[in-house]
Length: 92
Image (cartoon, rainbow, N blue to C red; front, top):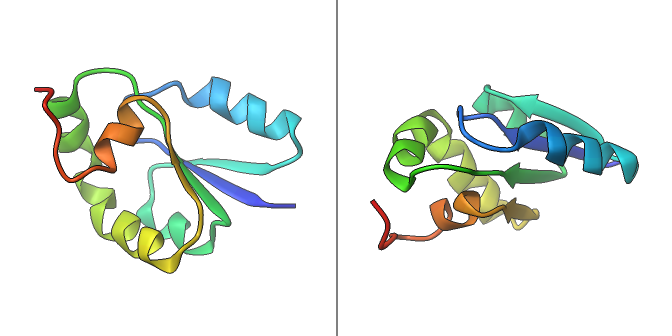
């Protein structure tokens, strides 16, 4: 079973993503702890809200996300979460 970590940075549709993944057979953890990324088979960065607020909230995860992306393991950004994976945004 694949271990998927959903990053909880205070904004996002966490539970709907969790339930969908569990229905598909994944082991899902919603995490506020960047250390959890180290053992994940996949990471999801959900998002709803303003870009500037989200970027302030994600700061504790930035190093872990960068390391995870560099590892080549899969990362999925949903809506605002995808914007946050880019180098910049035209939004707020």
